Length: 503
Image (tube, rainbow, N blue to C red; front, side, top):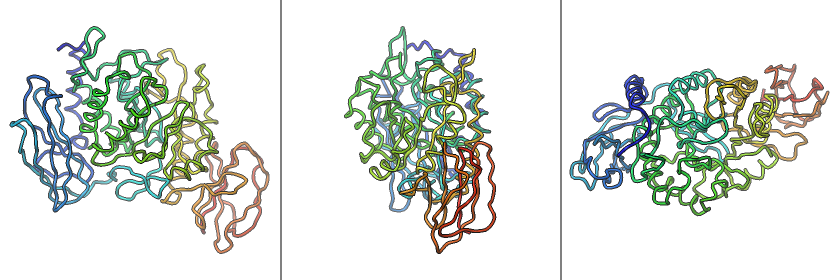
């Protein structure tokens, strides 16, 4: 079996980097203690002849008390088979394997699940209908960014991306599992997911090093508190991954879930611009959703990103609505119709490229995040500034050049101080307002520049008022408290916000 890339030196470097990964990112082994919502991993030697990816089945049943959770194992190359598990209950867990290979069948072991360390809040799930929280109840308010192909670059560039994220405001990253072929992103990836020779793929096997590399990057995001929103398919492909046979699509999804579902920061996005993958039908996307739903024991968030046509987010396997667009006025309708959170994962990008989707200003990106927020949704960032190296954040990562990230960090501060249950759109308002009635109200006046404004809040509650400038990143407390009908003076300039909090 031949594989043109990666070179041996790249593989050796990758192996060395894996060995240097911090203990916090490494999975626990049998007989040890495992934090709640961390990864346990068991590994055994097994058959390496024939096609282990296709011929050998491996499953494990993890038990605590009367409860049992079943997970799929996978072949990791070099005769090694693994099972991974993310425990959600404190105490002593045991497991037993089942396999069609005698060398892997009936293996047993166990570990003790202990309390999570600081910063480990568990996986994210939907909470209070239109919002999210971690498994321990800590609110999660997504402020994401897009770096489609960042994990398919050189190690130096990928490490630079991680350094940028480490000091940035983002807590979610949209990223492609497969490499991407698009404008400003024409380099060949260092790894391929399937063996590849003379431009042809061997779809009967996987390249474990490819997935090991992705795992390492996902673990590094997890260590920074960033959710990895994994895009499973996309239309921008020159390697043949968007036209794989259906049985290969299905095997890829099952292999991916077996490898990655034990990472607590994983989300599943079935596609970037699903309707631009003309080779697939709606029934294919339905099937992909169902495979992931049925094989993921932890039920990580699942959605799908649109080009021109929205997928039916009302289908039961969709957990939240992922939107490309900037028609924030539709948010309330989507919230009411789907009864699921709405994320504007792509509301165009701050930058200066010729494409109209990639040349909005930092001011406009800030504005769109606020419009998403006050309409009861969440915003998504991207950046596309031209440079000679053609290293654009939205595709390859690197460093950020725009003016919006620090304003998004300011908005994150505002949201961190807002009610834990999340903010819902307040109906029948002249200006959009997100609120928890009788507790918290956040208005944004967008392009309007009123010098004064009339308000009507509940009569029975007193509120403190703060004038917020989202661009200048200032919060000015206003004197006194307010209830019922009243009027306040405003600066008479656009893009101002007003916050009322229960006194």
